[in-house]
Length: 290
Image 1: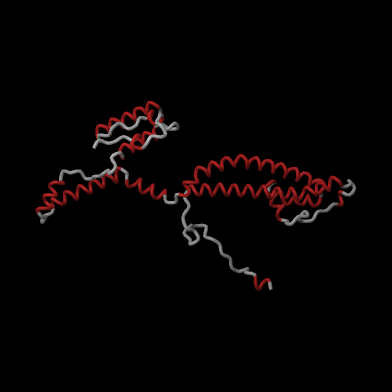
Image 2 (image 1 turned 135 degrees about the horizontal axis):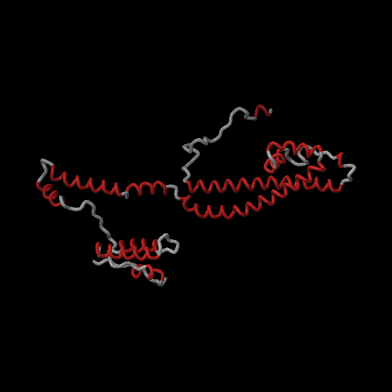
């Protein structure tokens, strides 16, 4: 009956070579992969510690029995293959992590042939590894927490890398120059067309020496807010800029945008730190001249 109901011919497993399967809804970014690696390391260490602890609990009664037995009866002591446990593979797996893989079977054989000598030595070694692994887990826990805190919110942003690459391409100097040149050629083509109407010719003449890009700011304080945001980033305590460089950059923004766009001086870095918490946005930002 077992052979009739047991499927021993077919098996299914996911395709590890690629994530382009119906079981994967999105591709993991490298922040999410870092969190998965931390979780895998944590899980593997927990499994090894629990396996080692279960073998310790399994061998502790045997060691106590050996201590209470008469020396004359110790040579007659024999242990089963599973060491009075539930599994034969569990001790082999624990000993393989503690000792060399080539010596595991030799140690297990010694525990069967000379249990009074081998069991106390192996038990002592397992307890030493248990303390060592638990100490390592406490040390790694700090690294895992820092890794999770650093990558958690970034791992949720699955399209952040795509948007970042697209934005980097769109705002690159080469892309901006190409867009300006395209607009310029469009303006010139209006005047160069042979059968252009008089109205189009007038528009072309008006646009011939006109700028190519035009933007309208509905909120007049948007430029000052952008400058304030840049200066706030520059004025951080953990910023990579030195104090003299911060003063030079602040002076540069004040002179450049004050003379070029008519923007009043944004809030200085020193006044940002001493600003009252109850100040409104209109008081914190600088108004553009109408």
